Image 1 (cartoon, rainbow, N blue to C red):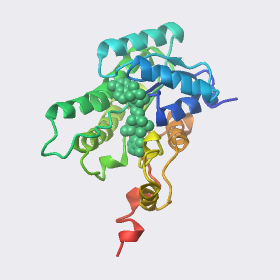
Image 2: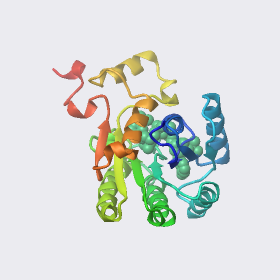
Image 3: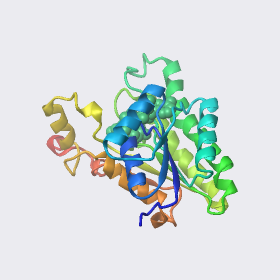
Length: 261
Ligand SMILES: NC(=O)c1ccc[n+]([C@@H]2O[C@H](COP(=O)([O-])OP(=O)(O)OC[C@H]3O[C@@H](n4cnc5c(N)ncnc54)[C@H](OP(=O)(O)O)[C@@H]3O)[C@@H](O)[C@H]2O)c1
């Protein structure tokens, strides 16, 4: 018997990397899972990748979460196919890469990052609550993905870091307002996660990154999926408004060992 037997889950940004691992975890633990990427192509690729891993039964539909019409269409599909929703995982993110430093970045790109990471996450959550959770006796659970960069900045990622800080604040605010309604809202804040973006790193850079981590390793997608599943399950039934960091100890250190002189 699985922890999520009979549960219906939506994972945004389930088409790549960490999202795939989160989808896989919920399916393997018994849930019916819906997932989206931002485009038809990426969503189809994600669906194929899940099949290749032996993960069956996932309903995939492209949805740019910054576009309300596409969000509405996705929720119509969930209503038609499952008739309920129990768990929402707000994993989709615009990484805000390649914007340059804060003096030269185009403000329009700042808006793009916030439209996906903050406003997109908000509108998907609002729709999950109004369309499903508030109409169900057992209500529902929301898990956001933020980042340890909400607390400790990385270089030339102003919009991304700011968006993750906004997510942490939004999680606490949503948790406070939704707690009396029986809806829990929590957040996992990862540090380094192994993704396809590591594949292009030269070995010395990958090794240096690992040296930044007290545990000497980045998270696997499955490590993050474990935290997300905990926050989505009754194992965390008395938690709401929490930001759970999963970063190999990066946030507890002042400096990496090799520069701590
Ligand atoms: N990777 C890390 O080291 C790291 C560290 C800390 C926190 N995080 C956070 O953990 C989560 C997963 O990270 P990741 O590295 O696995 O992410 P990723 O590889 O960048 O994948 C992002 C996912 O979000 C989707 N997405 C992007 N824009 C979207 C939009 N407008 N509408 C719907 N979906 C959209 C992407 O779909 P497409 O395939 O269509 O683009 C993709 O499925 C993110 O929230 C990220 O910020 C990651």
